[in-house]
Length: 523
Image (tube, rainbow, N blue to C red; front, side, top):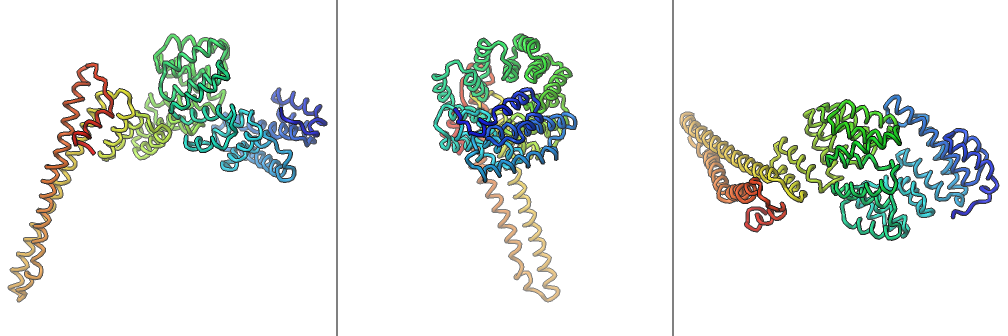
């Protein structure tokens, strides 16, 4: 339990009145009631009510204008709260408890003071580790799994820190099975915890194990039939599995219980997408956004729907409004939208951003391979498609066929480059030879008989370059060219034809590349 300061005890009555107003969402009134109070608990509630009142106004402004920039009035309010908390930390450091550090941290975060926010939130969870909201804000400061691993040793060694570790890594898309071990250890203390079940679902979702996710969601719904949290993710899983009837039942049940919740609208939108009713799907996703402008899932799915309609501009607008910068789907969607507009540089940039969040996603690697091929970077396209095949558990025949086609294209490009080099050398040698003949003739007439001797080396230099180019072309055909020809035949004959005949051939890309390397066909 948190020890109460004497000021908090003396201010019990105004605090309770303000708390009642706060629970009724009368934030301005709650802040006014606590104006004269100086106890840590009263100061926290007053400043927190002021913050939520400003957020309420910002949400209305966002719905009306669509402008995500901080309203000047809200920014002024944030700066006032920051200044008061800074003075309190300086003049009365003993009054700064875990909740005040939490409030200080989220204010700094909204003012884009990321490093200071991170340090304040870390202080908050160290002083009072049972404020889950502080853990959530701390997780939102992390950008990579490496940052999460570096932070974990600095945290208190308790149940909450382990829950945070699992949550943060799931949010960052970590697919390591170590997370499952941690979840199993935590489940021994809380075997039926909905939070831990949901974290297991999030982990399986990152690894694209849709069947496991569906079974765990069924377990959660059996425990709590009126559950609403996470149902948007459940509807996504049912959509990906093509479970039309089950998705319809979910949308109907949510509509009866929580008609005006973003999760319900997302589930209805996914159902309409499955029924190929694009107009109603967009309508539901827009309704989810009106109910909660910060609903990342609705913005992403709206972008997907515009992308299906080949409306690149609208898709870009939707993806850019996505609040969660760690959602790879928004970055990957932006890449595809810019590809629709034939802006290949932007497309490649955003696909690489998505890849930084999901480095083992074969779909993104395959898309990057196509992008490099459009740029004419065949060798980079080959490396990308290899990574795509290595990321897939059961590579499809098209992947190896495309790899063989890229090798053929690379071989043709190399041969054409060498042929152009040889032709340029021949033309240069012929030009130098004609120039030397003319110089010898006119030099003897004009009395400059030794001019050809001084410059006759130009013709020899041109002939040397031609011989070097021809030797380079012959060497390529004997070594690298021959190896590429064998490699193309290797993919075509040994693997593509077998996989394409419909036979039950279970083979991994790693085995294919290892065999090719052992045969001396690749490095």
